[in-house]
Length: 443
Image (cartoon, rainbow, N blue to C red; front, side, top):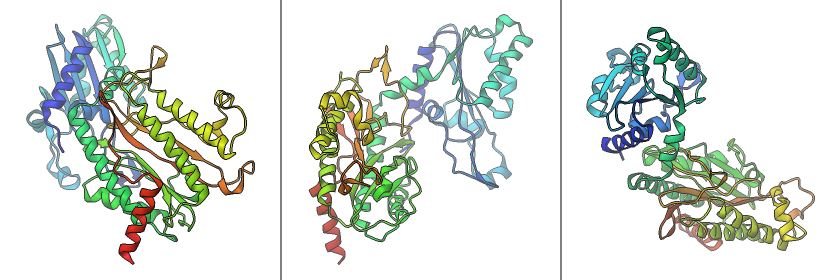
């Protein structure tokens, strides 16, 4: 899916309005990252830069200038000019002509002319918006531009205030439009297929990386890439929250935790499922899994317009603590255990995060010092878990080395939560039946 330029133009219109009259915003895209000698990582541009421009090439800077009124603004794109020899080696470029014709820039210049042109653009502006502290080299560049503006004109010509551009753009990105939601639905659907395939293909003796390859196959078939480095953790590896080595054997009798999602048209999905390598949960695995699932379902139900962002986490903590006491993993008064955060031995992370162009998307979680209220159009993950360390001798041996997390992507709507990823098998019966059906079909 490729958004029309009208969508990016509407975002720039909104940004200009929020900046006010006689201001300037400067935003650069991400630099190319080197993987090793003479080899780069596949390029992926800066999320906020893409959000405002739709431009996906490296070495680009967007400038938005407002004038006497916020309605009057100029969008200038500095980018790589077309270059026949370089395009043979590294691929096609839009060039300044393409920036004007295909990306709706009002003006366009080769990136080499940025330093020369920006000085005139900066002079006499009331406020300069840029991403303060995002990249040190760009901070130095902005400082040098301001110095040159003072020298070339007068100190009074320098913008009177520096403002954090992220304060505006991050909040713009929190509420998703219908087009953005459609992209996220597609990313979710592809990721659902990948997780279902993993459940069907897993078998004892398989390597974690081989199971990861099953995910990547589905992603690539749909023209997508992983939205983040996939976690495929078998057995006690599931207790390492950011385990990405994925290089161990999946053993009979263990669970495997997969945290993976694809990126479609710059928008991410983020799903976690935990299931038995051999297709059948043990009694101990069942007990912990059902506890996490009960907490997750209750937390999803708490995703309501007007509710605090923190409300699902509070629901999860209460259910997990009660369950852990029942199972004998925690001992004591429920309220005291919650107040003392005794559960953090087994559940040490939050219950979710914003989701969008970034898998951990931008936007404040608090406003005026309090957990912000949920609004229609927000998308967040709900992902409770339990992780019992394999060397925790304070608990019965049957629990040790079990790691479980269940994660779905949830859209806030006026009618209640809508789970974008609800087609992945999640209940114990659904998982075991799916795995048994595939095993029977392939025997």
